[in-house]
Length: 254
Image (cartoon, rainbow, N blue to C red):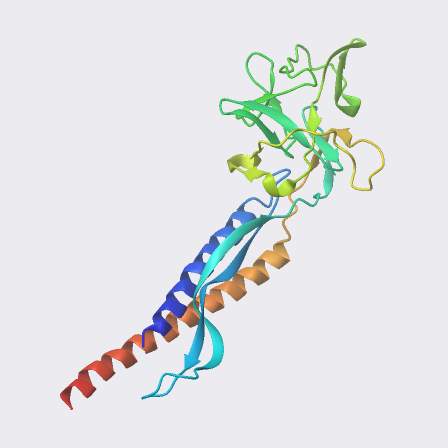
C-alpha cells in the first residue's frame, strides 16, 4: 500500500542530489583544471514478488523482481583533460597528459590539475592560498625575482636552476578522493607521469592553464532532465497522498 511513497520520495531525494552535483559542475566551469562529477544511482534492496494461494501456500509462483527505493551509488569523476588556454601570467602552468601537481597543505600532500599559481608574501609559489607548490625535491619553490623562465616546469634565473615542478601520477584513479578546491588525496604510491598516448613524459606548459572539462550543454541537458523527473515525482506523490487520504476517510465511513 505504501510502496508508492518509497518509490517517489527516494526518487525525489536522488534527483535532488543529482541536481546538486550538476550545479557544482556548472559553478566550476571557469575553475582551471576542474574535473566534472557524475552521480550514479542504483536500486536498493531488491525483492522477489511471489504469488501464493489464499488457502494453500504451497507451490509459489515467482512473478518479478521489485525495488522500492532508488539511491545514489557513487559520484564518478571524469579525469579527461580539459582544453588548454594560453595566458600572460608567469605563474600559470598546465599539464599536457596525465599527472598532477603536488601541493603541501596543512593536512598533508595533495594533488591538483589546477596550475593557476601565485606567490605569497615570502615569494613561495602557492595555489589559491591552499598550500605551497612542491618541487621535485619535495621542497617549496621560492621565487625571488619575476625575471625567471620556467620552460618545461624548470625555474631558471640568470641561467641558474632553483626548482622544478613536481608532477606525479597514480595507477588507479578510482582510489583518488576528491576534496574541495580542486584537490585530490590518496594513499597510493606515486608513479611517473606519462602522457595519454603512452609515449614520453607528461609535458609541463608555461603561461598556459588547463580549462575545466565541464561541458555546459551536457550539464544543462542533464539539469532539465533531472528537474522534470523531480517535478513529476512531486506531483505524483501529492496525488498519491490525496488518494490514500480519500480512501482512508471515505472507506472508513463504510
